[in-house]
Length: 471
Image (cartoon, rainbow, N blue to C red; front, side, top):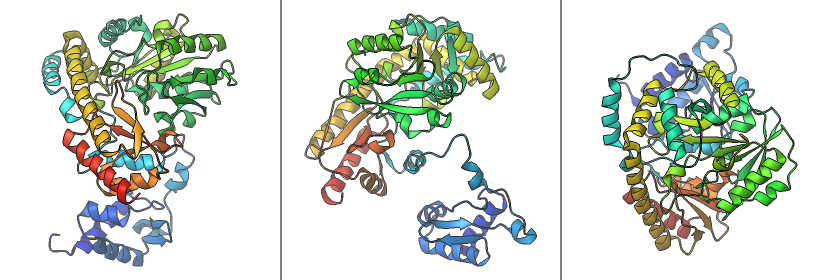
């Protein structure tokens, strides 16, 4: 194989992928640039391989669209065709993400790109020693790996119940459901509680616009603006709120992507309004423990006397995204319904991950890790603010976040953020443009949690150079 010309090696590999159904008929090939990078060759080598496969009748080019697989060896021999997966996927419950979102998801796993977009703790913030100590201790406690009852491990739920008391939330273990991150909680609610065709009032901008979660479940999204003071409660009051056909999704603490905080007064007013309209509230509070300057106002759930607020938290942001452990607090009837649905879907979250988190909480290691994380996040936030003041003060404005992972940047001039996103990516820097969050202004979201100090500086210099000379 080593002596075979590179272009023939690529021909063989593509034939193999087509033959095995990894690249089925009707699917589009990666771009020539992507394939050249994948195979570590020049684009001319890839072009030669593609031309050979075209001559064999396996590939076909469509002007302005790309190269598509039109046959495989089996269909050429038998005149039969495999299922048209591309057509079938159009009718799938969950449509594909926006192309930009797909590209961001793909590029966030590339080690050679500066990640100014990533919404998770960086390597310098990962609790290496705490995880190692806890994993060693937990390994001797793993006596069984049964499916459980869908609710999640009772010992973990008890620890979460204790932890929630620190924030003023009284939730017994029976009213807590362990989920595989906040997104699964939202998915369970969208298919297990909310009626199809319901209207979900949602912040704008909001990270939920970058996924099709509610829309895929047949919900209508109604945007409510977020300004520097957070969610516009008065605007919500003007809406057509239908009993049993409406719900509110809100992220009041270090809102993603704007990082705004809803004031205590606004929180109380929102609860009053929602009680009046009998509007269920889904409170996403995954960034609560990540305050930097001072703790955020109490969760909406602390003012809930009627079981109106479904409260979501997660350890994906505070410990590690890969653990996939979060929780949902709600009335026991709702939790029971969703635990039954959970058993139908996946039988519950990883038992090993649950035990790991339980031990981190009960041992006090979680609190020590969070305290250290806040100090580090402050250093990183202040450094990115310094870089913004040094390099972008003539181009944009921003506010100082008091917690979370991000800084929300608004450009002064009519900057094409789609063009800026592409230019940055081509220069090895990944940013999140505001349009993926349903923001029509000239905005980008920058992360200080994941990149190193050196990467932040390189990234900001790149953005400055692009704004000055190219965009």
